[in-house]
Image (tube, rainbow, N blue to C red; front, side, top):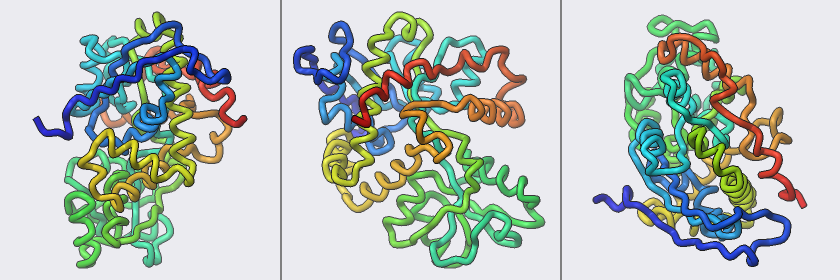
Length: 343
């Protein structure tokens, strides 16, 4: 088995008396398997920081991380009882809920979209409408980033074929060559693609309008039964993640963060420069916009779930809006997760 997809099990047995007085602990030690949809540790950096810094241990949790192939496999792992918590995208969770499957989004890890429209740093383009008449690179012709950027350009009054063209150029590495050859003037980038471009000396900046960043990315979810039966575990899990996020975003901790993520995926950490670029990219996407900066780590704006639902209906992924959209997610634990963090 490729070592990127190995099961990484970390024994972090808890001793309640070791926990700081300012943080609670679960009632007893719990073994938790967390399923993630790709093997990157940097993509889930707060999780690995919380493991490395002992935050889960202080909460009475022993964490195992299981890398699977995509959000669907993540949800299947939870449905089968192979994982108690997973990190799917919101779209698959909505689709599963429409089929009556009992999943609940509990923690918004990526409050900003995982996709963006980028141009080279030195270009004159400042907004999507400036790209009229230009060619925009995409990873593949049918990738999720295509639909994301097409919506942005449609809303700017631009029509594919008349005002712009998409050109499949591959991932961030191949996009570097496409920019250099002037085959493209912009690129529909996933967060990792932008990191690759910057790491390879092709400095890019984002021109994605802020309102489209509301299409938030992956977060942590569980089943309704597990949520109802294990409130102490959910409290401890989210509190450790919130602490891990704050640690990650402190520049003074940068090298320690990279050490923790390299422990989670040694191959990913071999290129320290690229790892640092990816850390910068994911950190930006994990930071809420100013409008929600005071809500606390893990918070999910209800209106952003409305946007996701509307987009899934428009795309045909949902036949109709859900009868009870609020059943898909909960913000009930956000306050307790964030208590004491600013002290």
